[in-house]
Image (cartoon, rainbow, N blue to C red; front, top):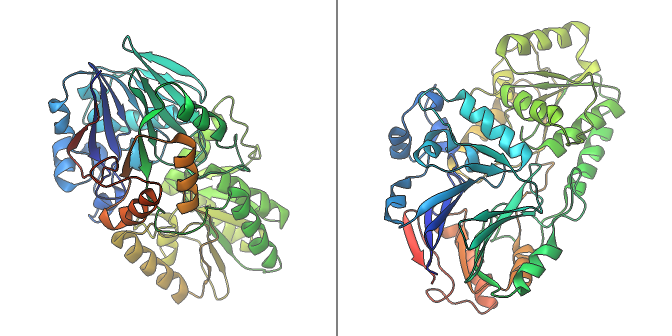
Length: 449
């Protein structure tokens, strides 16, 4: 059986992930993501109203025209998790393919919301839920399996396409976390089994976000302890305390909410994406998030401003707003607070906790710098980088290569500079560039069999 990999998006940057695997006449597409920084650099762009070709020309979504070079039919579109750099282009591209979208339940709900918000295209692809540990048939000779992984969003998986020539493991995005705050630990046992099955692993496609960083990525339990320590240290402050984190990071939001209550403050979630992700998680059957029943979540501008007015009227010392804006996004809540555009008044000594690090990309770094300066000009004190990453560092990469023992490796989710650390460590494991280690770019195809 011929096996071919199309590296469509995410092989020259962090964002707009998309990869297609052709096994004989059957094709499975992994991820259809958005490069959000290419959108944020423009003022007042609404992607839901834009044509796909315009977004492709901007570099915001994958250029999937290389798919016409693959001789087969798409059988499934498989987003690995609910981050926008993995699902943000589904509403623009999925309708081109007569194939179902197969995802874990939480990811499926987020995809459904993306599709519902789309105003330019009608996306009628079936949405199918599949849990980690389950499989489905692809064509007559292949099988798609979901393996549970831990990341900075719940319900993440690494999909595995089992073919007669061996398995293709799509390894975006994860960390090796044995003590997650929500959900099950990463299923390393299953990865080791897949690496030792008949045929083994033909190809491993790996996220290289932290491949230049030594050591291992700490567990989410470590970030939870950091948060508890910071929030306990300021529990006697009688002014404002504000926290910001990734809206999609449900485990982190859960920790902030719990510790806010522990120090006698009422947590309130503010911002459109904060309401979207946490509200979806709270409503979904089978997810035991543990949010308080009366937790306030407000996304629309007017309802957010009403919540801010209530906080100011009743006393900032009684509340802890959890807001969007950890990357300094121009329209996010924290940025508006820094510009003095909300009823919430920052005063000298108020605390702002960034439970997120800056995504290493010039647009984000510039916006975050500006946001912190604006907050500081109003007297806010910054607690920075109370966070652990959702991506493997070097020791985690070694662990995955030992478990899977792949014949071929394709680095992904970075630019050429970001690939360098992974090329070095894969070389230490005996892989050679151009032979079985394939550093590639967007729009290429790699024939493995």
